[in-house]
Length: 412
Image (cartoon, rainbow, N blue to C red; front, side, top):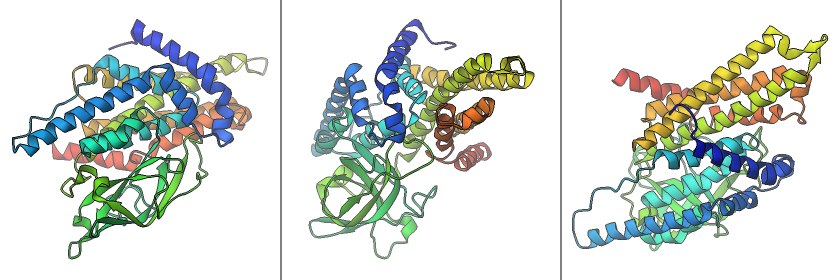
């Protein structure tokens, strides 16, 4: 794939128009007025048929889970895992809205991705048919909002090793205790996947089972904080969760068995997160380049447009190189999907490391090109620079990506 097809471009045009009509007028409220993003996202879901597609996806997931459960009940060998091969066009259609939303509100992508991506996918991957039907259907249609709670105040990149949240067995279920922070959608989530360690006396903490439970908003002992103030991604609400003796029955344990550890399949989650960053980075880079090109042609200094100055030309040229490289990585993701493949984890880490860094560099250079105006909130490069920075932090910091890439190299 060397360029967007005509059908891809047609979809981009439609999404661009939706963004102009429904999101651009609300950007200030989303970024500075504490307007939760969910109604505008639901409007997008309805406009593009994504709500119906989500419901159909949930129905298929329930059917697959029931088939496996029936085979297990008969004592039969489970059929081979049914891999759902997402084609290139389907992947492109998922990526295009990410790019276009990221031009104005990258936070919308994060809020949406955690709810219909991380949260729903975790339930579908590890849950029973009843659990998928109970929680995933609403998440995939965006009728309910989901949060995925793994990060803790003292854990950071060492999510499993430093995890202190616990599940203690009781006669009829479990008591959950602990706190989570930096939780996307945390303040407003209806459904929460809470990841913690089983309290196993006599077992060293680093060897204890990592389990996941599904919680509902309003459960006794569960406190969801107000949105935290942060540097960027203001359109993506982030909060803290506090659990104090939250009682849950076994039907809230994903898979309804302690034998399903959250450590299993974590690589797939990391790969999906990291390749998704490339599409967000592309949207930020494309918009910064567009804004800078227009500004350079109209901003006059010393009697001529600043686009005539070689140092400004160098900035624009470097932005274009970053755009081309990032777009080519996005095209690679689409091409791999067309062959039923995904990036290996090390390649996904390299993809995230480069594209996140490119987005930050381009956005900061955009602020520099705009000069004093670029430091003002009125000019959108200020927001894009703040939003870009988190791409080097969430989904694994740059340092974690470097470690993953290097370990893969020395192991081969």
